[in-house]
Length: 196
Image (cartoon, rainbow, N blue to C red):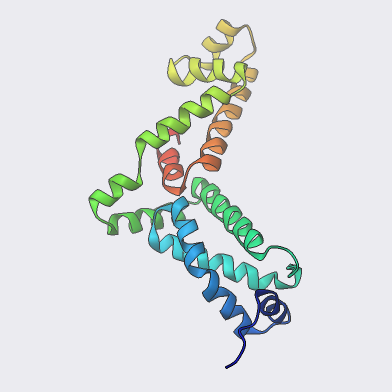
């Protein structure tokens, strides 16, 4: 009976360009990586696409892998970074958002309701506000929550119109970044449609 190669042996062979070794690594990690990514994005077909993207990246950068270090740690770090980049692209790539919405429409209405959780968005939004710098928060509350113009907010706070505008841009970026880092893809998609 043939001995199964160790992960380090498979990694060394993969680094050298052995596609069979790469397939072995892929088969070994596919299921757990899929489950991990599904926790972030909640859309099975998207999670599967993300798994393929991550393994494609692994193949492309295989020469940089150190087989003496934890490969699973490296793999999951790449996966996590890829999810966050995908979330960030949702904010700017209209075509990508449309594709994701089409995938969602293909799921049942009940599943869609579970996926897009306004409660989760509200929780993350409140957390972001609680961590926002004080002056940004004042400007955000005046302009976004109380409906004041930049001029009115500037007069109330005793700062320039330009400073109010700068604080608004920073506060919106702060909220988006916080939700992208702490939410999943569906919450980020909700964010894009909710606060624009």
